[in-house]
Length: 136
Image (cartoon, rainbow, N blue to C red; front, side, top):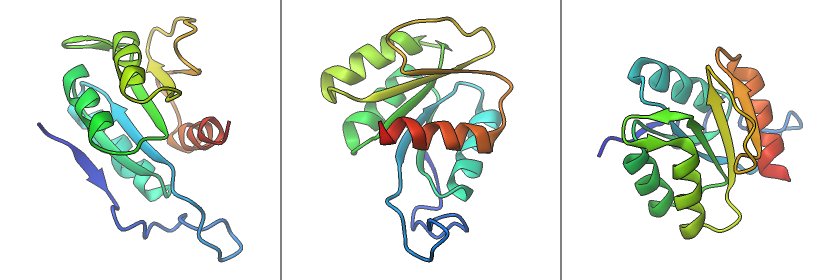
């Protein structure tokens, strides 16, 4: 199982709250089957000060959620071995109350997701939405 992680030590330029005090790092699993996009987003979110693990399939995403504390699950809608909706439902059996965000080129309103963002997206906007969702 391949998990990508960027900036695991939390030493990104945005890992503080601007006052010099370290802020709690949001822990995210980002599930996207397109490997180049997944690597780019994992790296960019790490730069934004988010502790992020990348996964390429429903199975890998579920394993990542099971393996560590997660604040927000961000998933593509369509995955090679299922759907983002199915992933969220299964992940919430392991982590009740888990916040979930869908990123998709064909977004759909679905109450299983706490937030939906349409592709293409700006990574800074994604990071802001992730932090806001984690804070709810």
